[in-house]
Length: 457
Ligand SMILES: [Fe+2]
Image (cartoon, rainbow, N blue to C red; front, side, top):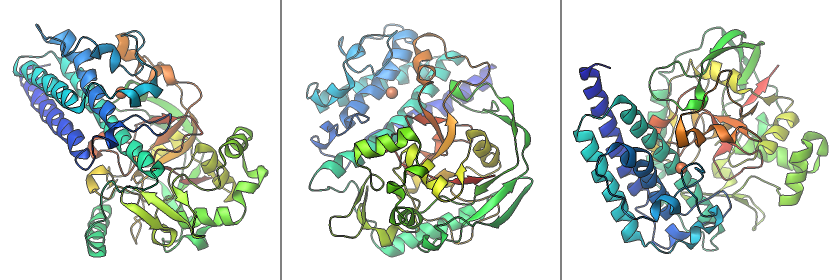
């Protein structure tokens, strides 16, 4: 790497580091110290823990190794705020994170400042390319935790009988309309993929789309495709190596399945028909008492949906993408609709031709939103709104190599028993997502913003 390139990269990464660290604190602005202690489900962590753990990552993998003379902020923190890196240090059981009343919030914020000062000192020098890459990984790691912080708070507030609101409603419907208009304008700049055609969908549920445009299917020719990250910009190790896959001709829906369409599935007895469900899915549904997506309630007889902006009735959300579904529910819905879920490579081949725009964290909406009135030929909602469950198991690509050292535990050791999700959500930071990005969760997971795009053929 030339000196010029190195200094440009240093400036970029420094700016990205500062804005990311600031955003994490901004996301906590409406939370009380008590809110930040709650851990309401096994998947979640307290917001306070997220603040500490993201500082821990930079301290453990950057400052300790790369900043001469760096002093640990607290000798207990390297194990206390370790999440799962067994080769690095011991760590407490995840379910105990809500017990961390000490260290107090002031100390956690001081820890973050201590780490920030260390990073600034490091960036003032001449860090090696490998160091800059690890800082960049830390930034991406913190962005992942920003999304987790919000999904965890949504669950925490849903389980609170008072149903607190994370972010009050936008000032008026007008504000929403303006935001929507802007989204439409951005959407109109989308590129079109090569070799697709469109034809109307015939899936049941279209009639109940609740005002969303009629579902159409985009046809793709298939053939030999390259998938995986193409080498421009940051990516995680699980997006590599880029390699070839063979795709048969296939079709993808031009938007996500809506709440209204999913309500049709429910009304048609979708949760009572074993023929629609995978065996493990039926068992999970029975054991957990699932009768609707997570955050749907029907105490008054009508469905209402809990969001980061408070309670919404189904009628208000019927054209918005359905969210907070397990893989099993997404799969059952697709079977009911006479369709299927896409493989991750079908999704990626289509999404590579679509602009990286959508309803993400930076839009400020904080919940999935209906697709634009006129969907362009490339389709809508590939990025943002909801992570899209795919039919692909989370596995290493041919030739996959995990990062060296403890960071090798970041992604690779989870490559069993999980399904891939693509595309990001309404709480994913916009700089974080790309077509090759692979998220992964166990198939019964519902607390993330996870939804459905139908595939066919
Ligand atoms: Fe982490």
